[in-house]
Amino acid sequence: MRRVLLINGPNLNLLGTREPALYGTATLADAVESVGRQAAAMGVELQAVQSNNEGELVGHIQAAAGRFDGMILNPGAYTHTSVAIRDAIQGVAVPCVEVHLSNVHAREEFRQRSLTAPACIGVLAGFGIRGYGLALEGLLAYLDERKGKGRS
Ligand code: DQA
Image 1 (cartoon, rainbow, N blue to C red):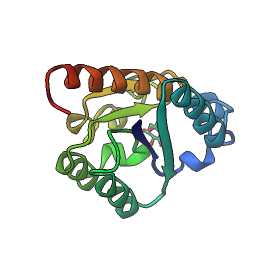
Image 2 (image 1 turned 90 degrees about the vertical axis):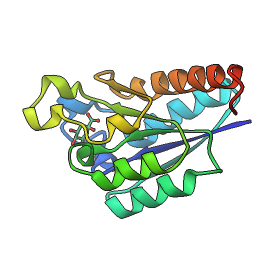
Image 3 (image 1 turned 60 degrees about the horizontal axis):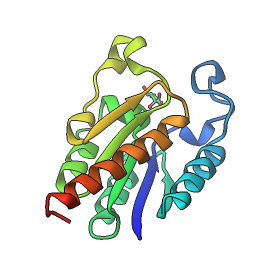
């Protein structure tokens, strides 16, 4: 069974009450439940973590090596600042999809640069919590394609 780690960064624990006009009214628990159900239907085991701490996020990414087939990551504000998270993604051979609930490209200029995206296989932005499920689909397609090419 494939294993996927869903990682949410700072302030995403506040989903539901945090700037609902931007991020919606669903809570993080709602988002995890929804993508978890989708994962189960696709025969994938999904584990979810959230942290407001950059070092802890680095730790989760490092610990994914050899334990997970892929990662879905919303680094929150660390997207725009964290060389450490980018290096962690690059340092483990675990494909990662970056997700943003909001369309960061339609927002402030500082949100339009992602330091972490270049280490990821793809990025989804602007689809709200549905983005996590879309990322899962993309990640599984990527893993299937890679397997077909003879790499596991
Ligand atoms: C976010 C976008 C970031 O710019 C912001 O700091 C967040 C959430 C998103 O999901 O749209 O915390 O990653």
